[in-house]
Image (cartoon, rainbow, N blue to C red; front, side, top):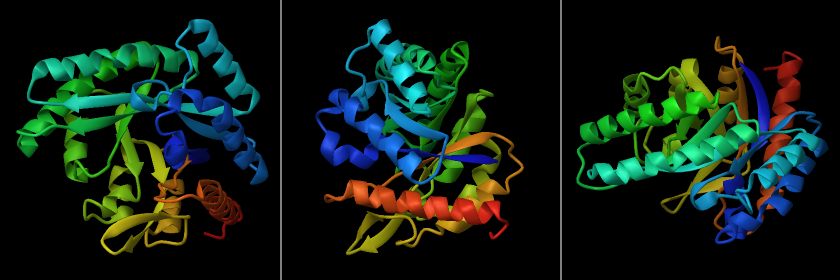
Length: 284
């Protein structure tokens, strides 16, 4: 697996919350500067193109094309965040959220995306099995739309589904362009081992969120890479050694509950750069 660093927009959620659509002008230079500082000619950028985290000031085609030029000029490959899929007992809720993905996927294609991501919102009154079934059927519909735009899709594990449930969703969707977004820290929230799950998901991993957590008074606190209990280096090595020959972008994330995002991301980027340098020399 070929690994390239990226940055997750959620790392700046405390600053951008309520103002996502005006965040692009500060966000793009930040991501480009981090990559340059730490010696990476190629970098990804996780960018909202729909839903609550949309960072595009306009959906006008000329503006979207201008954003593509801006990303290209900064050497940034977009990994779009399309929006959220409603997993609901009422089929009309599901259908409405599925329909919203098409324009977002079209914008993502203009921006040069090959892998796009989305979130999920699980509503009540569903058994676990029914939730997996609804999710898989809806994912199949979205993936069919994504295929028209030359994209593969994956959705983040947060605290909603276990790894086995997510594997069932991907398998049941039957879509060859459907895989996993592995957020390595979030497995702690579901009570699973991040390294074991990461290895299990390797064959169909399309994207990774790299973050570290420390447990503080019952709260999983996001910390710079290497400061917490997630076996980050061990997971990075497993990704690198994988037989999966895809190019996978690793979105560095710091989900802080207080200020200090720039410093935390800089330290996380430095950690990854150091690991990558050692790995290139055969030191891992």
